[in-house]
Length: 162
Image 1 (cartoon, rainbow, N blue to C red):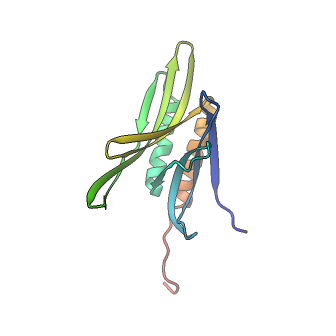
Image 2: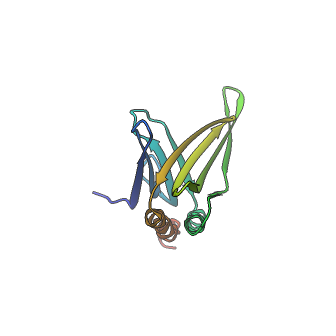
Image 3: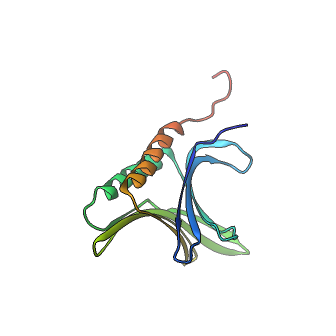
């Protein structure tokens, strides 16, 4: 049995539905890995709805820095990754898909917290998953895991004998 480096964080909505973000080595549907890092945002409500952000190792490392910047902020702030934009044709119509990850610190009255938000916009219609995090130590742990994966996934396949 193979192993996969992965960590999943969960939070609950007001309706008590679990929302999660899995941070792991990117694996294609055929089971092959590619040397990239995936953040998969999902909701546990029986739907198959999800947002996947696949990052190159340097992008995962950059996200680690964004997490640290937000964690150290004394005020509310947001840091967003560079959006990934894909355009494709579907039924003769050009479709634009934009995916991004935002790290956020919120402050309200005497309370504060953090969130990792995965969002995808398809032709102007936005779908986002807001995974809230209460403790700064948890946010920093997820950042450290991204830092680790950014180095562990920095490889490429080469033909045998080279």
